[in-house]
Length: 473
Image (cartoon, rainbow, N blue to C red; front, side, top):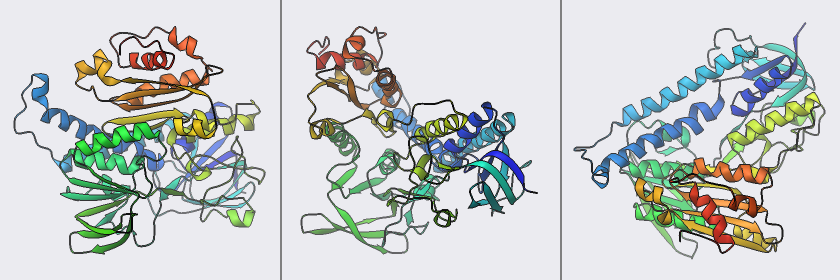
């Protein structure tokens, strides 16, 4: 007889393993199915190792500018092999940590590829990679609730297919065989811009191609414009409203034919190309079509605010359940899902309160609606801004280029959105996220005491500016 669980989770990315831990805390008997590596793409090939690469680039940048801080660092150089090795070591450390957490919380790990035969029934076939010690074997399993957390993979466009040598996805970009002297990045979302920033800091000639009129398309236009100017000042070439129509591969380079969107074309030759045109959900091979599970046009699974699909007993969370495709969204979505299964009546996922972060230089972070979106909704708003150049801590850090922007509802004083570009804004944004979750008004924010000297003071100053009370500008 097949072993039975209360909950089986398919996929061990951040959403999957956090959901498993929360389910175990709630007293459920839990198993998690994984086919390749614990921690999924995020821990092994995404969020975490990319930040390790970007940290190396950041330190290299500071060493090159040591004299700006009254210091001396001669003959500064970098070892690309060592940079990649450090990044992979960070990923391995976190991968091991997920294994430890599964054991600590008594979550069973089943190694292989899962197919849902029917509600409550899962068949796991042996995967290609070696199972970790203590993992359960492939076979038939049962569960009252099945949660799909299979994540996503790079989107592939016709004519831009990655070949792992000349045309990369983020997998190859994170572990290059050598550092390219020139690079073409197709797509200016978070993934594309982070790699453009990393490789440019290490000296590569970088060109970014974006089909839309704005880089970082989901961000506030003013913030994106500020960031673009900063990137171009660093030497990154950016073409917007343009698309790559053809790639001609040579022995060790690629020539791209680019439609400039104005009736003209141009050619750009680079040693390597990164295709960063988004991701698609991993919905294939699960048996969803046979089960009648509803999917969306973009290749994701349709769910409600609690992760439920249209088929009782089957749920989906994270990237496979649609945008925004962010690890922290997946984690929270999973917690909401299992707490709803337990009958705890959690609040449904509110996507307007999910922060987004891009870890380039300068960093970008945001939460809530943009100024453009507010205008489209015909909302009467107050907009406040505060530049980094007016902040003492930013000047002392040598990071005086940036902007904090806030958007308030003029009638209610509710904070509708916050948008930032500059040093460490990915750490600052959570202050506004908490404020929005607590439904904090402008009056409460203006009466909050921020420590001095800190970058966070700019958050208060931006609020004050929205109401004509800014102090340091």
